[in-house]
Length: 96
Image 1 (tube, rainbow, N blue to C red):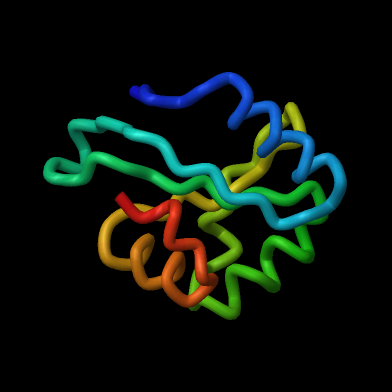
Image 2 (cartoon, rainbow, N blue to C red):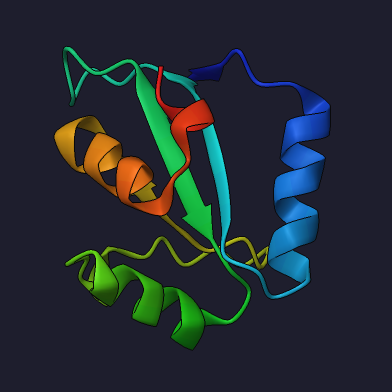
């Protein structure tokens, strides 16, 4: 379940994806499969090759891309890997 997300943030994330950018969206999140984690960062791009290449830089398997019919395919980052990648990308505002 996602929460703590403003509509403007979602619209901006989708626009960046539509423009072919690698886009980041972090929000509060709760899933019983991952107890103890309370945020997720979705990293998306409309260019799936570009997204896979970005993921490879961070040791993310392209099989982990959530392929979506609506065009907003993305990786989900949680936990220590989420924090390490956000630090490496210089996205401190996404670390809560």
